[in-house]
Image (tube, rainbow, N blue to C red; front, side, top):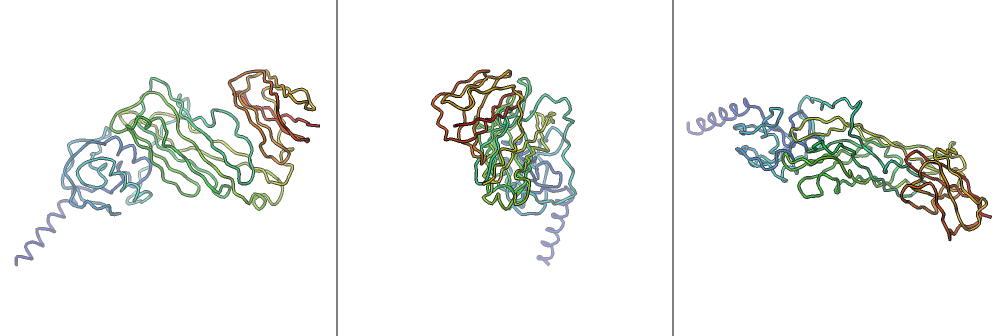
Length: 360
């Protein structure tokens, strides 16, 4: 009789808890899936406390709520959903259940609403706005990116996805540890990487915004070794594309801020070919080089400011580069180049110029 009474009490208590809804560990915005956008909510609620849940293990199941907390997010959702481990306190330990359950869909998903970005002042900028040089097999690229945001705009967090073709790369890593929102130690930047997609969430701790934008991070790439297999038939080049998409930028009320996303491409060349000769001979900077053939000193002049010069041989290999402050004239002495034909790529804010140089 006593055991039956205890059983009935437990069943009644469980029924009452279930009637109050539940928390899925890591789904801090309670939209049915654990993803990068939950970082914005967990980070926002850091430091808040309330009643602990009965189940505090990090299971992939919805856990009962004994009682709601006193605090809500600005949209009215109770902050108990940010307490991923259920111990009654939102802190950095709650990011572990988020990581464990990332990608888990536990209910009908309510899509994140992104604002219309037409006319948005905030934007993403890759590689300082400069053209990314062509590459071939096994070459490495480090491509910086930043978020251009008006100085009077407060920012509490950002979440996004970087999409790409994994077949073209031996290694892809998006380093966000130096993103501008966390360099003072008052925030966190986390990512979840899968072939073809890297999801990133960055948040300040609490409603503690910074004003304006800054460094986003660095994209590190290594091209696959088997470029010959990838480009076994004509043409000898291809463009591989990267897209920063589904960007949610929020202020200290977790309100979405319009931001223009961005994409870019990298041209890949098959080694052992004279693929570089097929490059379009753009001259958007209206640049000239002299003397040509080369006589020991390279002189460049352009109508529009130059910011970087790269030199490639006929196999598409980079043999020399020089970045500098914007200017319309450049002289390079003591440039050591073996006899042959080279391609000079000149880059600036207005575009690129690609010229040929003969070294006798």
